[in-house]
Length: 164
Image (cartoon, rainbow, N blue to C red; front, side, top):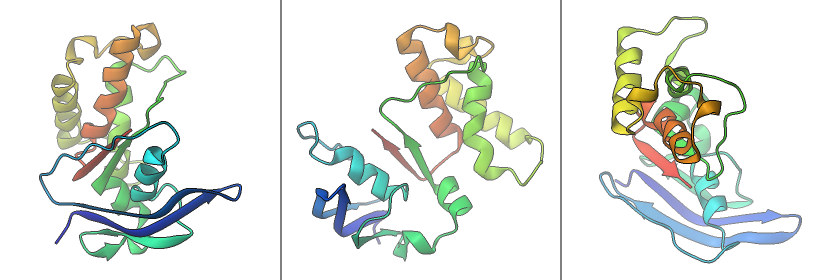
């Protein structure tokens, strides 16, 4: 069974079709790149796959289950999303920014567990920003900010990462 599949997706914005029957299947362990000209629908497809926008027609399946039938919290644990123009306007430390990826794993006002802290530490190391953990994101260079924003996604330990 595919990790994620899109079948016949139709998405429109202001009456203009952004996706017209798009289909995609991604198996576990696969790395897939979407290539195409500007305004071809790549971002729209990724947002539909992540459940961030609702297609007008078609469906998205995660492990064979309709994406819309999966509770949002569980969806957020399983799918990580990194938008193409992610920015942080607050002086959060790199570590706190990455820890935001753990929010779907926290219940209510629960404190971070040892597992949460370990996942954040791994993400910081994997994204080569562990040495920047105590620095405010707003004080970093553009490339460092991009890596810090990236660290938030793997900190959530998603099964699927959609990076735009």
